[in-house]
Length: 396
Image (cartoon, rainbow, N blue to C red; front, side, top):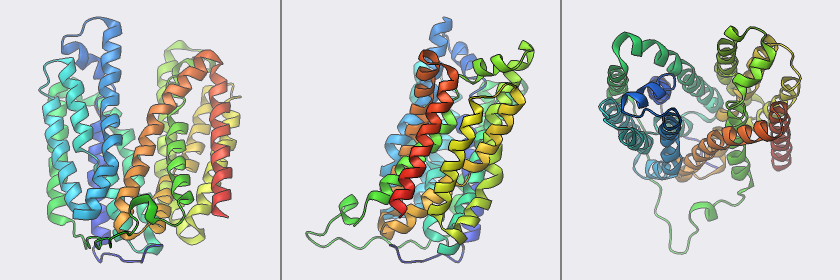
């Protein structure tokens, strides 16, 4: 267990981290609506190649971010979390501007890889907030930060659909880079960190995972973070086709599918800070088990819906349930590892979440294509129920 320390400036740090996380997540998701158009603008004409390059460009950032998250977390433990936030915000600002001057599809992919490599502001903010906030306010603070991250995921594609027609695709990237640069200035000037470098290990003393007496809680938290993202993303490949079976008017299919995808994010934004605050009172692990079980139950009627509005309502309720998971996962990790290892372990948690973002659509697409679209909901339900049972077993 860690000793409880907190920074007297933790509220101001939280506010700056929320703004910075929101802007960087908006920048990462901004290009979703116009990515195929940008790829075509860069000289790719074959429709199949446009899809392939678009998929590679979108996934590149999350791939490199997943690989680098533990490294940045370890460096944050050693040199300070504020320094990592400064690096991430400045790096993302430069990367976004460079994406706006790409001249070919491979340059776009390479620069998206660079953005993931240099980025990590949201995960770095989680480390800073988790380690600098009073123990009895950790759940609320991390929940509030998670709401800002989820809001970025929701607002990014919306702005991506509005800005290019107004100012052009390349100027949209420049604008995103400029906003992140403002976040860089706020981070450098306003955040105050009480950083204590970890004490040197004595010769023969265990380091890393070996220094943690019981690794089962950490393993459970890594799995839980992956399950959360998998549950959110598993329906991505099938949602439009599934909605087409529920909505009689073809002209309403894409709009309804967009509302379905946004409903879960909106529910999570509304519930994250409230569930985090509840977890501070009743226990973070109790909330994790309840949220996973509730999500599993809500997946059952999603496989049985007969109208689009029913799916929208159920995804919103599922978002409400899932909103408390990420702040509670971070809180459990923070309180189960030595202070000098919190960043590294939260970095591994971020990597697990990115893994869920990649595995979820792949698994959902495979199951939906070979077994049936409703089977995606049944399969995800079983995974979430299994996660709840395992967390309950480890907790007790």
